[in-house]
Length: 290
Image (cartoon, rainbow, N blue to C red):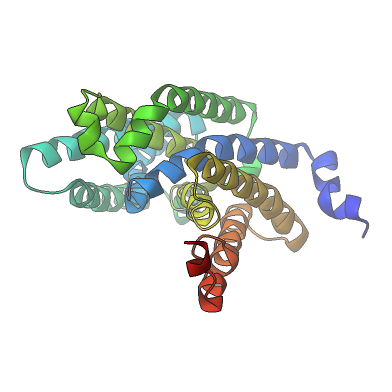
């Protein structure tokens, strides 16, 4: 096979592959920066919890309207926002930390969603919700993905300074009169939006993968935040493109192929990364740069 047949022919010949590629690119634009801020704020597991929290809303919409991506996205968005608000209220009203609140609501949400789909759906329907089908992304879904990516980039640009300061020194932001709580809540809404967008393509269990794996990888390559953002975005874009090609040529599920490609990038970063990679540590070269 020629390089063209391997690297581009599937996208040139099949519209569903082009739609899937565009969807992955749009998803990467929103998920990569969100994931990096989650890593910087030590909220990586919150992203995973929120990816499960949208399940009951999507399940209820599925029971009422069938496999309608629009209805399921709206249901997932509502469920995610409810969990964000409820966890925030519990954190402020009790001694529980935010991660514990999210974990509790995530477990209840996940169990409720699986129970609803198992009772009123089928195993095939449950697999569709949990693991997604990026090759079935249509024009409506692409519009939604592009809209979420645009909203995410605009809001992050507006709140960039506040989010950076809060990520490293939230007490300083509060002492300077910064609206840290507002920025934090807006950020959590963006997390929910991007997970709902990812749910359309990759399913609830894998939507967080494209958000967190590129971000974790970027931390192993760069020190400055702009460089980390660029690397996380590049890895997310590469994972979407390469994962689709692997799934096409290998006759494999597309969603897991994309996430495993991002996983390979993470393990490569873990081994060869210039900011804490294992090989660099073993060679004993890090202290020379101090």
